Image 1 (cartoon, rainbow, N blue to C red):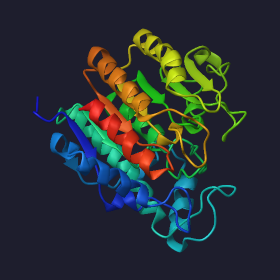
Image 2 (image 1 turned 120 degrees about the horizontal axis):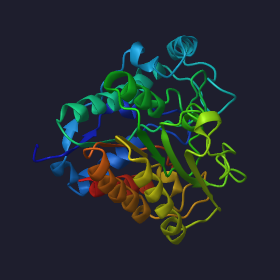
Image 3 (image 1 turned 45 degrees about the horizontal axis):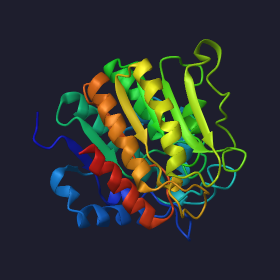
Length: 314
């Protein structure tokens, strides 16, 4: 086992995934996190990796060919929206989104090869995109790609996807709603008060997968005490499900002070989730765990929340 057991993906190619003209998902999110990571000298405890470009074959594990072609076309001009108005195109968008997906699948390859046992990619966790369309600032859904890649490349069926972003991970949930093997647990602001308006407690899967998914909506302004109350449900769910690989989407927009959400967690909740999942991964997954940054539009929260996750992982 290498002395450094956790890797991190950083580089301009990931920072390039950001929308212009004051859009809340701007290119500076990556750099805010990186500055705090270096300030805390956490980089000395990590294996550092440059971003990796995904090929179209990997992206097509989740997305339709028509949609991939559309992203490529819009990327050349940078004009228009990929959805109803949240996700504008920009020049180089296809390459940037492909680096997000490629870094995630590269991390999976290296974890499976035993180069390290855990990894974190800050510009990742784009959980709203569906197989055929963008949504909510998300072009390619690297979470869905990761799930499909683990299955196609490594035969891992019992993937656990845990999401603590303020927004419900609808692009993942509905894409695998009828898949009984996918463990899905999502703590998020009540959909009656926040985009995308989904993720109610009674949404537990459908058809053969009914009763296999865990959605935990919480009221606006829920703080760490609420997190501490509901998190044991996630732990019990995962212990019972015995996953083979854990994906954590740790959006910082559930931390108090985000400009577009109404949650009040602190970075301590994100650290607690990461520590808990690290321990569950040690018990059930051969320690295999991958953290995905997700949302977050307050740069200080991004810096503090994601470094808390990384510190817990190492």
